Amino acid sequence: MKVILSNRCLSLTGMLERGLGYHLQQRKNGFFAKRNTKGFVPSDGHWRFIVLCAELAHNKLYITDIKVGWLELQTALYEAKHFTASEQVRRNYADKCKATYNARDVLNLKTTFGL
Image (cartoon, rainbow, N blue to C red; front, side, top):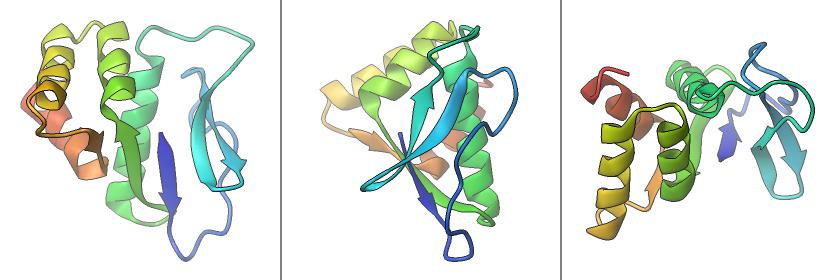
């Protein structure tokens, strides 16, 4: 998942919330989510990290948007045991409707499926 920072924020790296098992890492071409190699990662940690970034993007203070591929989102939902939403993301890709999701899409998905 790629995180797009606002103009007010030069850098945002590290853990955003304790216990999710993911953090932000800066690379040459931007800021990306990365799974922690050590420690416990809950089954819904990836999904909760994606939602947290989407909510931060909604506020537009530090993050303006996110870009998450369908496979990463589908896998995160499946790991979190949100099977119906996971299947819908896979179906959207198979029907050539949606290959990449932004913050608004993630929040809509969360609301639609009551996650």
